Length: 240
Image (tube, rainbow, N blue to C red):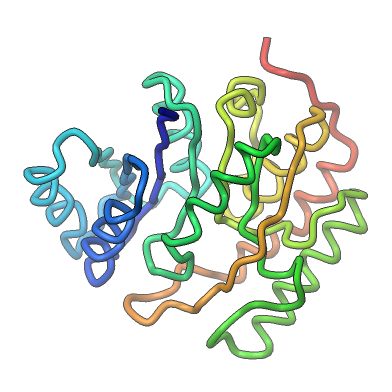
């Protein structure tokens, strides 16, 4: 049986964390979860530790001091996943904007031949619920900008709901990844594309969080804008 790890970065997600963990573990097929918590002052990590008593062999926790960025959290998780030997590694948010029920669909896309599958909000129209129209437009046209600038045929370039096959994470030089905010999502997709991996978008419905507070900021978009320009002129080599 394929081993599957779901990485969930957290910062102040006490309203959601137990529900999202239980929702993933309720799925058919064995999924493991790695929570990477950046010192949440609301006690998110304490909730995870309590749940580990019931899911000791499936639920894991890495605690970090302070907010170190989404990208660094995932890079930490990728290295941990490779070290532990997982076949497939997922990225997912803690706030139910990504439906845990879509995890098997992302995994199936990889089993059917994709090296990287993306839970896409824009490959089948616009599938976003409860976002202000301004935020939808910003997100949608950010992906258009990335697609045109980099010449990459991905409709949702900023998506953070993904499944990587092991060989993708083994091949990408994780130490060379530069962007640390949401631009990280663009950089990882583009790197996989430049290294010749097969990428498939799977249509999903993205639902804005109901509990907790969004971590988005204006600085995220600035990093992504300038980072994309730098990506266009970078040379990509597999990890040696």
